[in-house]
Length: 427
Ligand code: AMP
Image 1 (cartoon, helix red, strand yellow):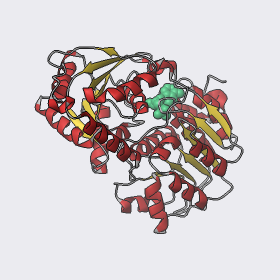
Image 2 (cartoon, rainbow, N blue to C red):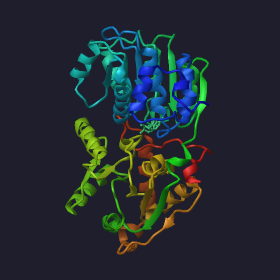
Image 3 (cartoon, rainbow, N blue to C red):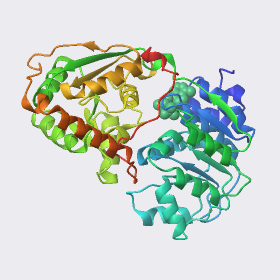
Image 4 (cartoon, protein in one colour):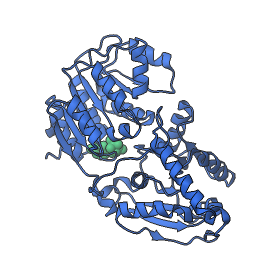
């Protein structure tokens, strides 16, 4: 496996853009996938966010597409992304790496002005980045023709599955020319995804990487047992005690996001919320402000934050124990990236101990318990009360979670796990 971009066979213009981004050598997924993609092969990439997989497909795509020309309303390549935020991040990649090329791109995502997106399409685009729902919508209105697609990328296929997008993906793939190159990236290979690859990819090369050990060996994890009434106070105390530069605060419920943001702001914190019910322009703006450091605490749901890459995030707070243990892994993976130190704290009420068991099993170790002043569980009626009712509610919550929501599916749904492939940073 090569450890230089030069050896991968990329053009001098592209090498220049890569150098301008500060990348000195390819990540394992890039080193493994790029040569196959450049040879126009179909590729299945088993890799999660944080491994550099986006550049793993955007770089060779730029190389392949450079030189050709798009006709009006007939994009030459299509990247399907499960969420608007990820789609926007992929588009940023094209802007960075494509700075020396004349390639054009368009984003088709829900929540943004349809007219503007249609206008972009009409000029002809080389790269179309879309969420499945919006793409089908525009196709059915006759605004896009898909007969000239030469490369199809299905990104985060596992997430597509969780969000109920597989039928849409099948529909879209069925509308594309049969002779095309198809690339599929997924953190896991669930049976449904395997079926998808068998149906839509032709003799694909499989490349797999586990998250680099350096990503988060440095994440220290802590647990605070408390009760529902004391949660805000405990969180406030930890934020005060810790040297928080910037943090993701994950909540299981959207309604808690808004009230927690309000509470934090009242306490003088620089906080904002991010979830799927918010207007797209506000979501994009909030994310930009968090990335630029203008917002320090981002209170969010799992889907809204998934895959979002913010360099140097110092902390992750789990306001609730995630109901799906894989979400815990994704949540704490937001910090300790690129070898930096990160700290992950989780609050737990007595009612959540079942979920903690699942997390402990999933990560294969106990999380260090800490006591925070004033945060001890009060054994209140709310938390200790009618346990059978609680169990029933939990079941209901879980069932609700399983009946995947469409749109960009901000209700966190169960992410298929890493199987036995526990990331190094959790061992
Ligand atoms: P991804 O897995 O595509 O979400 O990428 C995770 C992060 O790694 C992003 O911040 C990228 O900018 C960064 N990255 C991707 N490739 C490289 C590379 N070869 N060298 C350094 N950083 C990279």
